Image (cartoon, rainbow, N blue to C red; front, side, top):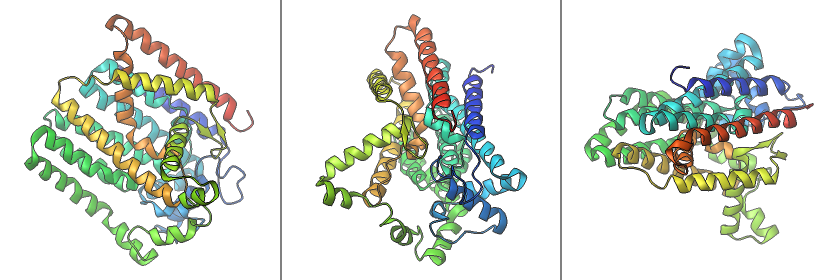
Length: 394
């Protein structure tokens, strides 16, 4: 608690536990709340498979999430053996809390303690993130890995030796979610800006080699399991009729590409903040409008980036990673509509840092503490209301 990042981390832990204990456990296909949390029933089946067989499952509808890299399911299988689905949910809660701490660590290194603390609060109090941390999802491990990567990158950009930490967390990220592949161009361009091409190439190659050694086997295994390294052809055959993308909107609604892209982006943003019960229940529109107004104002306040080259390089990395994640999400949605903001939880650390810094910049120095306290209080109230309103049986 002494460093002031402990309190938002503790609150994230408590919120995650509330969701983990409040949503009935999912044990199999007959569980009535199987998809209350996104794809949780498939995560349960996949983790249970790993606990029993310690190898990749067959790729079909039941094990649909096995199209993703398997690190979350492999580690989750160890918790399953200890205590079944509840133990795996608690594992996810811990991942969510650590994501908040890593956000604080990353932001404090470049923006100072005050912004770092607010950034941690902002990440902890995204209602959908808190909810998702209480369920089984590989997004939780990917989000932690990316936040820890950005924390290590902040230290590297300040001239400290953290390349091994960078390599470790990048491998964990790629081993959990393919959107983390965007960390490679992000770190390369950030290091080029800060130190030049020679060091950037050396560090990026070391990180890339670590990820290849750690997770290369999965790409090779997919060739024999599905016929290609990413199981893309098998996934397309599985989801083309179940979850059609742009072509359906073009034919049935006569939408052009710009309108469809805007539709995907808008629903990604809305579900980033709060879409519950299998994306059937959403935050009320006035709340979305308020969040949009606040986030726009915070981004406006963040336009003054300061003179620190380390901070600018870190922001370059965050911007590149956001761009690569957006492109990958849009490409996927073009074939299979799935506009879900959880795909962007890998950028929680830059989100917290930029919006926290920008929000405080809107106020004079003497008023920033109270402004932060007011925002945190409002977001805590929002999260408590979400628990009361959206939990099953509430």
